[in-house]
Length: 123
Figure (cartoon, rainbow, N blue to C red):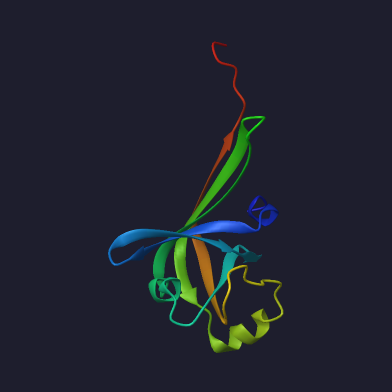
């Protein structure tokens, strides 16, 4: 989970009309949970109501041919009113334009990661 805190953007994978959809979002961690903000009536808000989603973050160095990726799989749910008041003080300012008053919490059930190391061809 420590790697997630080192990057500001992740990708949430959710179902939209029975098809997979991927959306880049900025996020923060709240303990081991991922918090994102979304707007009223957004596709993401509609799709993430108690749904199983995947969330992926990565970082790579193209010149060094190294990197890592972490994928969380868990249930996403809208944050309730009582918790919403507490989260207003969390440093999560949406990068996307428009009002994003709602929080979505992803509670991970499966966490997978991978490191990519530089290799020497023919070695």
